[in-house]
Each structure stands twice: as structure tokens, then as C-alpha cells.
Image (cartoon, helix red, strand yellow):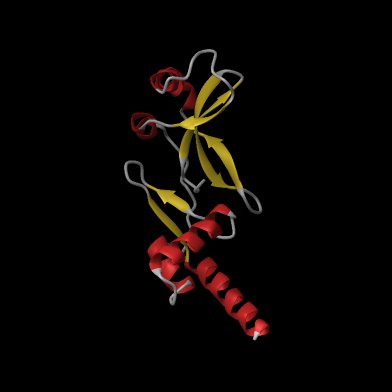
Length: 148
């Protein structure tokens, strides 16, 4: 899941709105909205609209757009050098066909070798750190030269 992605988390049957944030030193963690207690009823209605029956099973569920707009968050710390995934794809895999390159970029994100950040609510943009992309690209070049 991308940093900044919002979900409904049910713990002990109680829903709360959460967001993925960077974990220390790596990985991710779930952080509750600062107004999560004000959103419990709306989150409950959202789960019922999804067809989730009460009592709610503990887990993660999609968060409705309305709920995302109502949630209040502390500032999300983004990389100083954000670039969109298309630019990352070009840097990492300039010689591959786009479809193959996209697959490889998404694998890096899923494997948490490249941390992705979701910015926005309705149509979030996904960005990554240019420095992290360049570091991965350089590591690939070094590995390729050692195999020659």
C-alpha cells in the first residue's frame, strides 16, 4: 500500500479511519486520523454500504471518498525530491518496452524497495523519491557490470 493511502481499520469491532505513513526505519505503519472518534458513525455507515455485516470483523476495508475528505491528518512528510512513477520508469528502465518497465516499477513498490506516496484524495498522484530511484538504477548498473 502506498504512503498516504487511506482505509477503514476495524479493531475490536470499532471502525477508525487510518492512513499509511512511513515506518521507522523502513516499512509502513497505520496512523489514525486526528478526528477519528468524530468519524466512527460515518465509518460504520460506510462499512454497511460496502455490505460488511455487524459485528464488524477486524481488518482493513476501503475508505469512501466522503470519509477521506472529512478526515483530518497531521502533515505527511514527503521526500524533498518527488517525481511521478512515469519519470521513475524512464530512469530505471529506459530501454524496456513501457508495459514491461511498468511491471518492474510496480514490483519494486510492492517489495518496498521503492517507497511510493499517494498524494490527494479523489485521484491521488503517486510519487517516489528521485534519489531513491537513482540509487536503485545505479545499483542495477553495478550489478550488471559485475555480471559482464
